[in-house]
Length: 320
Image (cartoon, rainbow, N blue to C red; front, top):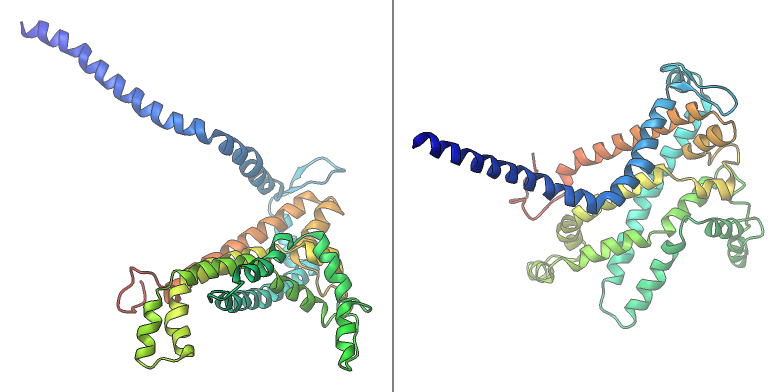
């Protein structure tokens, strides 16, 4: 009796287990089927080219000759015998260090103005955000080149006040500054994110601080900035990543000149890849840029524990 009972019960256990494993398999399978368009696109258009470029960076690969494995020779050449790499890196770091803080300051300043409830504020928000919709395009770069040319609108404007204009994009002292100014002008997306963060700050905090005698400056540094610090953290990382990859403005407006004063890193990478067709060397340059962006992001993330505050933080203590 016991033997027959065990014999009957055994298939039931197997059926239960097989049903369990089938359900465990079918559940993620349906999910993978739903995300398969994105997954295929990611693997084919992002992951595969990414790792292929890593392989190319260890080869002597041009369109004119067969590919040849050379190990780390490209990287050794870049760091020890390539003065253009040093020059482009210096220009890029200067651009990042100048444009990112100015863009964040301008975006936050305008966001605070546009956070006021006044008549017609929606129109002003749209008008200020509009340049970001076309920002980074070739058309805007051409417009900027005409504005700051020798016979441009800017020189005519300052000429009204008796100042003598010059070629702002043809002078090594001011060419990079015009590109930085263009980047700062395109702060619309950053401003919108700041504006959304400002709307989330309870007005009770400002009212309570006013009762305690806090002025506008104190409220800004003690309430606004701490409450906005997560938004500032996000905008800072996005701005740094975008600044390191800046290419269109320098290529169209100045073409890296004059005297390589606007010869940013992405332009040097482009020249190696599509002018000299040194795809292996350009891949090594691209991976150096990627590592540099990752290092900057990690550094910002590490320091964020000292200046980014969340609702879970209590007592104003630094997070460990």
